[in-house]
Structures are given as C-alpha cells and as structure tokens.
Length: 378
Image 1 (cartoon, rainbow, N blue to C red):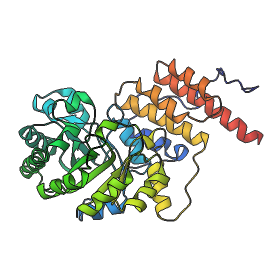
Image 2: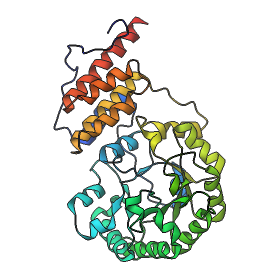
Image 3: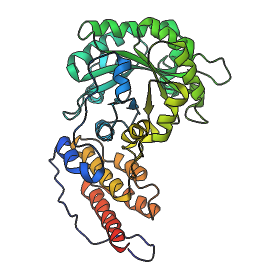
Image 4: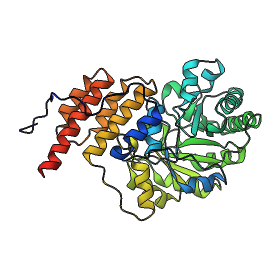
C-alpha cells in the first residue's frame, strides 16, 4: 500500500481457513494475537449474588440483533463476567418456536449464560423460566426480566418498559418466574432490567419500582439511566442509578453511556453500583471488560493496537461461521473493529462487498500484513 491509498493486495492468507473448527478451537488459536483469553472463565456459583458480582463486576448487556453466541463468546474471552442472550419472548417459548429456543441455547464453550426474557403474561413467564432452567441445567446463571425495552412494537403489547406503568403486574411476573424456577432450580437468581421511567418530564419511578421488584423477590436490578421515551437519545442520567442504589438493598447494576472501560469504572465510583452492564461500548472492543478490571485494580489499561484488533475481528468472523450465525452481521463487525484505522472508509467499503468468510479473512490478513510492514519500517 503506497501513497496513502488502500487497495487490494494479491496475497493469500498466512493461515488456511478451517471451516470445521469449533468455537473453542477458534478462541484458543486466536487468543495470543487477539489479546483475549484462551478459555472462558465461569461465573462464580457460590456465595450471594452481590459477592459473585463483586468478583468481576463487568457484564455484557443483552442487545437485540447483536448478542448472539459469537458475540457472547468474544465478550467472555475479553473478560466479561457474564454475557446475556438477546431478548427472548416468553410467548415464543410458549408456542415452542425453534428460532426462539435458538436464542437461549449456549454453545459448548460457554461455561454459563444469563437469559433475558420479555413478555407480559405471568403464567408464560412461569412456564418459560421452568423450561429454560430444565433445558440449560447448570449452564443457566440467572434469568433477567426485560422491563426496559422502549421499542413501540414491544411496549404496545404491555411488554418491556410498558411494565414501568404497572408495578403490581411487574411484581407478579417476578413471582411467577421464581415459582417456575422452584420446580427445577431454586438457586437461580431472577433479576430485572428497568429504565428511569416511561416518559421524560414525569416523576422518576425507578427507585420505587426497583424497591417493589425487590419485595417481589428480585435478586438484583439493572438500571438504564434514560426514560423509555428517550430511546437512546440524549445522555443517560447516572444520578438515577445512584438513587436506585440508595432505595434498595439488593445489588444494582448500572447501564447507559458506558462507552468503554473508563466509563465502566467511573459509573461504579460515581453511583455505588455493584456492577456495570456494557452494551454499545463493546462494539469492536471485546477487551473493555478486562481493561475495566485493570483500571479497577489501579493498573494501567493495555493498548490494543491495529494488529490485535484485526486478529480479534478475524476470530469474531470465524465464530460467526462456527455458530451458524448470519454472515451479514460481519458487516457491522467490520465497521466497529476497523473504526479509526488508516483508510477506514475504503476498508469498510471493501468489507461491505465481502460475501464469504474466506473473503473477510483475506481482508483481515491483507490489513495485518500492512500493519506488520509498518512495524518493520519504523
């Protein structure tokens, strides 16, 4: 590559692509160059939930259309204490949809998983929690109930953040989940995820709502510091997280505008939250969890150079293939991992035209060669 113009290099990848490699092998092969762990650490099984969260307080958030198995594996390899499924419909589980169950099942490499459920009917939550616990066994770390999703197609059914207007009904859902789990595994915590409230300009409901969920039996509450009407616009109010911390005795997990390790640690220090859930801050940054642990321990945060980012991207693409995810998701990954690199616009354009795993890996390999050439020339 010369003259600042990025272009196609006629070069074969250094390592042949193994299309039959399992996720554990892919992670192990990629660990050193990608700066990730070669094995995934399990979420602690002993002690109170507060103590278990304190051991590593940084969690990968549930994200619709994002937190598939490949994404969860990368997050756990990057240091996340726990990774959540995408939102799972209790109605979908009730009607036995295979596609819905596909969202629930972890890969063999995943030591455990947090399953987030959404819906509006307590009986379907009772049924779903029992079924999930039965099918996942020891791999089920906790069940989280989504009471935060602001999307109209969810809220118009009385689901997600619509439950913030119905605390008694929401409490009944928590109790239903606990009833269902008691039939299979009574040691599985039930948690809830909420927002500051439904509508901006109205009195904040999060502290009183969280207390009601605690009384109903929730073991922890995650608070996103925006109202539902804000969607993801404006700034998250971390003060809301702090007010919930002061209102309940159960662990509070902070969420909202955690763009990386610095914000993750900053939220804990500013709010007193027991743990922090990272969503968009994980885009192209699976290391943010381990980085936050470094900062929390008073250590310097490692630098993740271009070669490490390219190796992580290649690993992530291979995991998409190994977990049978739709390869179209690699386009988003390319935009996230390549952000800020030299000639990023040209690179993203090339990535948008990749149609196979091999083409994505060839792209990464070419960029890696360019990065290595620059190191030699320095």
